[in-house]
Length: 260
Image 1 (tube, rainbow, N blue to C red):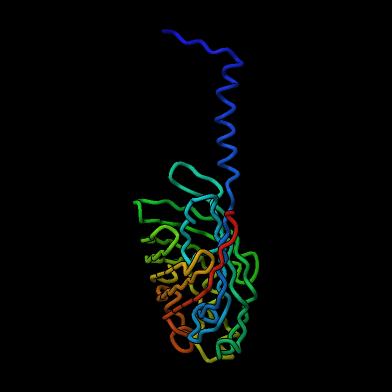
Image 2: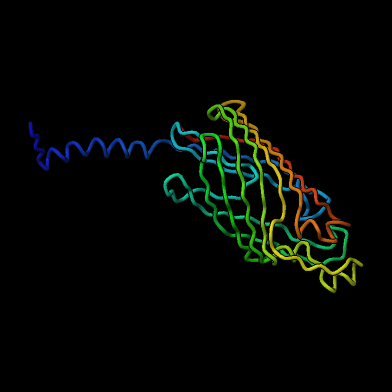
């Protein structure tokens, strides 16, 4: 039997579907904010650690789970999907370096604000891979990047554990800013002149843990260890006054609101 639909009938069919889609899009938005301290190297290559802020924001709509975000990744969020791959902006920064910060009279490096983007995808249900690149518009003026993979275990939004490897890259500008030793540096510090090239900066591993204590309050913690390699690890500054070991840890309380 051939069925025929008049324009009015088609409108009548489309309206409920559109209403359902609009209702889904308007489901309450939940926001989760993490705030706490973190301990990390004062500057790249430094042996001393310093306290800084550990801050993160996650959002989810309706009953959807909060998307996984590794606690050590740059600030950003997906804005475009191309099949299974998500793309989005990535922002990072590194604080200013002074000679007093590292105990050696080397050149200063200004505050570095980095702008770039990332691509990420799930190659398996519980395995996410991510590639990121950021260009500094101040400070070291270099290009930095990172490849990461995370195995994720979770029970909805009640708890989540992740762990995976990290590989960081950087160009010559970045390496020379943080690990290079100019003629003036050499004269002031007694260290040999050093002009590194770009390449792999470090390899490491990171782990994170989240747990909700109740509907609103939760805790978050992470630990990361990087080992400087290549030209970064061979720097006379790193070998004598700094460290190839670059650990970081953070702890935060989270508060969830909305969704009502």
